[in-house]
Length: 303
Image 1 (spheres, rainbow, N blue to C red):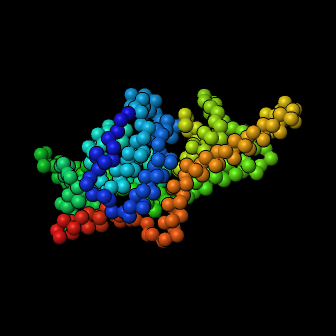
Image 2 (cartoon, rainbow, N blue to C red):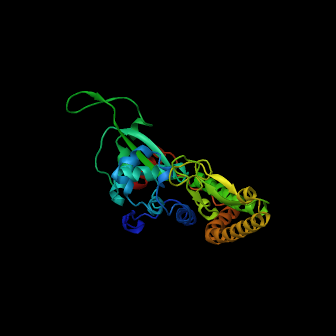
Image 3 (tube, helix red, strand yellow):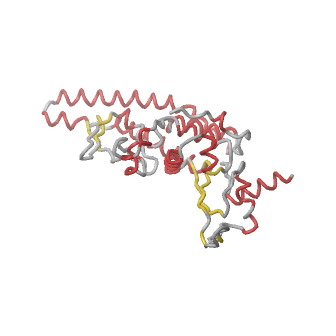
């Protein structure tokens, strides 16, 4: 599926966050969200995916496009995201929820009394700012006089603080798993999905990219089951071949060593930038609550 680039769809504003943090989020998206968004096994609406034609939509790279776009704004509505990126609402909703589960995105829901085409989020809230935070009171339908609640609207922003913490934990988990293989006498040879109708196997290289950000475990990309470790000594011991056991473990450790080096090289720009931001003590960007931001927008527009 072809997506418009962030430069084509984003607003002219460069975003409220420091450029270094915008770059950090973009690097993180390219390191961990370049594949399908969400992967088939981690779709929160698996039943829908199984029977929908939208399940066949290629969403590779969508996570990068969303993070790039959101780095240029503070808060934006689901409606504006759909228009700007020209995406089917269901495809966009599933992708955003996957990013939210990975602590990359923050979501805010509110009911609004009016729906009209808006160019900035501040306009969406302007009519109700005087009422303060979201009210659950019912409003009167203009046509029939019937009572009904406002329409539910979702707003999104990058969650820099939680994303920074999640990235630290995720990188640590990946590296710790590989180091364990280097130090263990019975290194992990592969991972296997225990699903009754799946049984897919993965190498250590595959598994390093299958960390579920919600619980930091390795999950099958096909069915979402937690993967089971297959130790190098298990198969060899079953056959009673000590030489085969030694050779298999040695090869597995060598593969883990090469993979760890490759991951370090690939993540070097990201880890260096994270270390630099921590060393300099650059405050994490915080857009604040939706109403607080809407007030700032109105103040800036009034100046």
